[in-house]
Image (cartoon, rainbow, N blue to C red; front, side, top):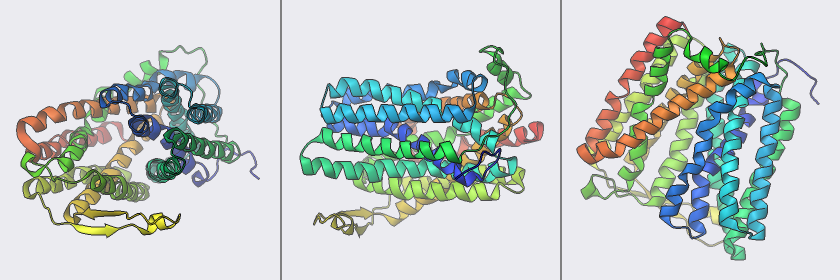
Amino acid sequence: MFKKAEHRSPWLFVPTLAFALGIPLIIATQVATMMYASLGMSNKAIGMLSILGLPIAFNVFFAPFVDSWGTKRNWIIATQLTLVVCLLALTACMLLNFHVIGISIVLVGVLALASGVFSIPSSGFFVDALTKEEQGFFVGINTASIRLAIIFTTGVLVIISGKFAEKVDNVCYGWGLFYGMCAAVVLMITVWHWFAMPYPQVVKAAKKQGYLEPFKEFFTQKSVILLILFILLFRLGEGILTTMATPFFLNSADKGGLAMTVAQVGFAKGTVGVAASIVGGIFAGFFLKSNYKKMVVIFAICMMAPKVLYIYLAHSQPQDTTLLNFSFIPMLWGSSSQWTTEINLQILSAIAIETFGYGMGYTAFCSLVFRVANDSKYRATYISIAMALQNLGWTFSGFISGFIQNAVGYEMLFTLSIVLSIPGIVLLLLLIKTRNV
């Protein structure tokens, strides 16, 4: 079907690479929590198990091996097959009901590690296989595809497996079906990649270059302090807002919140919000193809400006709602269940606009990281270090957000999220000027 070629249309592999990455990432960071709650684990134990996501952040330490041994194409196939094996093992664990808690914790940890390692050659291959012009557009497609995987996994597959579990009255069987479906999807994508991915000609790093050489090159590059500060601070304001957004939606009005239900928040953030961020990412990717330096700054500002809508929500605390009826969905499988939810159009609009801006801004951020990596022979390591640094900045902002909210309230917190977004934009301007990216 496909002849061996150095370059192929990115449409053949960029969306599927991102989609395959999104599935295990969301399992390790969100779905596992759902699973253990449904299995009766205490909230305290579930909170402690948040460490299962840590291997994803540690992927940077594997990056030099990916850059130095084999090809990124082979790494992608190998790590995807590892993901399939982990998912099948989780399937067997659930269906056999064999030491479900203990074994699944180990397997989810391995899945998180494998997905973290998979992200290294995936990002590096993106830079190797696409031209700079293609990267500008497809970075938006890449981000959108990861978010589609999140909707597909936490929405479609979880709903199907949940309904199956109710029908057979066995929670473990439901999760077994879930992991089996995930394994089938990732396996099909792996087979597709074997045929569809190109064989780009790249400058290979010397195999005997030493483990620390890629790190040395990254931290001694031109304007490295400026680059590191930009990566650390660019999403500082966004991290503070996003971390406190859910408590803000759920808290009662007397606590400064909007008194929404969990179902309302799930619909607003998990459906409308994710969809808006996907559209924003694609929109930004399209316009980043031309006049890049101007557009990347505009999109960074677009990520900051809509935060003012949250200040309005915190000040006015709108309560008027509209009833939406989704009962036609369970009718598809013959159920008479009533699926309804109440939404507040003001809140929903604010979430949609803010996440649309976030989609544009984060796409611009990823695009710049990829352009910086273009100048190195250790491209996968460069991208992994950059993403590890931005995760560090995001984690710090999330950590301090609760203390800030407790001290000054939601309205001032959201105001500070705008103020703390300004240094990232200033650093972006300086970086463009000094690095000519």
